[in-house]
Length: 287
Image (tube, rainbow, N blue to C red):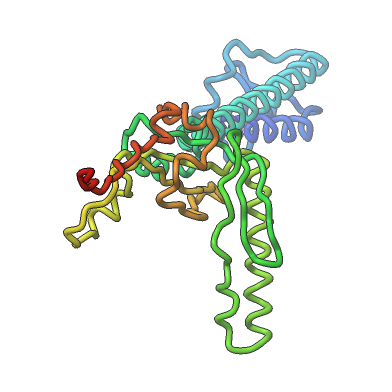
């Protein structure tokens, strides 16, 4: 396309040169026209002379009209070629941008857990007795520096106090760390309003979490009571952040509807222990 534009520009330059030279010598047409076509035009490529077939000397008015029409057609042709080339380049550029951005955007928009798509499923480990609940609200206790996450079946309970700001050596450093922690809490609350925070809970039928069972080295037996463990995850600025973890949650502390979601009945959640037998001391025989 670029070569076509250059060729059209060269033709336009040729026609303009001829027109200007003809205008300067139109009072002496025998210096410009012959029986085979136009002469002169400066140092123009002789190949262009074959583009004027059938020309004969005629009246100056006819010659002027022909040159004007040729000039107008040449200008229109160059403008059309230039507009076509610019439109094709623009379409190609837009298509290439769409091809680069569309697959990435589609992959980000498809998953319901945003950037926590991998972390949530890794925590669940394919277990049926699990649920990922969206956080509707974050309750902040600014005095104790704790959080409580509200989900459709209740609340998570208070997190451990965030006292990381106390590690600073000076008051200024601790105040700066405290302000940064408060800003993170505000960002987390905004993420919850837009549906980017989840309370992921799974049931442990063995009574202890997987990590506890792996790290346990004692030979003592524990009660085989089912419990739950949970984690709060947030998708913020394209990163998945683990906010808090809850281990060994008693099923009796969970909402009844949430226990049903985890596949537990009321009997399994609150097992009734059989009363231990009462030892009666032997009675002496009557005398």
